[in-house]
Length: 207
Image (cartoon, rainbow, N blue to C red; front, side, top):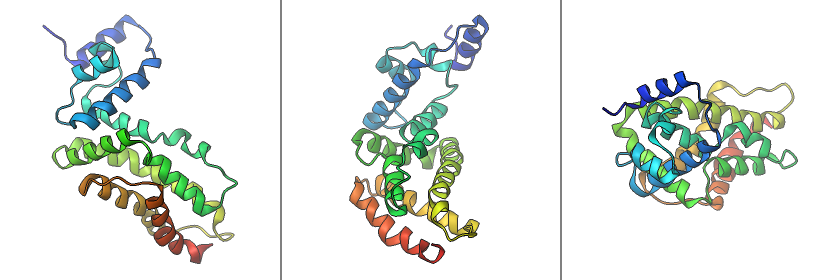
């Protein structure tokens, strides 16, 4: 009888075989490729394993479910752990905000945009996916926006929670609506309009 993912993960853990971390990228990229092509509901661990050229047990040792894998794949598109390090701190606030949103939402990567749209289409029918993405993405994106804005504020000024929430929500709300609801791509010029016409005017009084 075939073991389920959790059982396989436990059995391999008992054998003490270390995880080959070099396989993670291949698995996550395969997940995004298949998401973009077929959507969340049609996505299977079997298909991901075949695309990544790994066994199913290799995937289950890392992720206990398809939902967990897709959440990590979404994070893989926007690695907040390294995102702030990539920003050019010599640029002004406007340019850093544009770079932050552009990198976060992979505006130049067609497959990632398609995968994002497919994930969005699945949220209404998969509350565990929605909650997982919200919990992971919201706190990381909010912290990133705060880190970019803070050095440009007036001395001694700190954004109120409600103001930081609004500034953090503007970009993702518009781009997710565009990608998930009306299914249109977005480019850097669209992100620049969000920053120029919505975010920067909001920030003027605090700078």
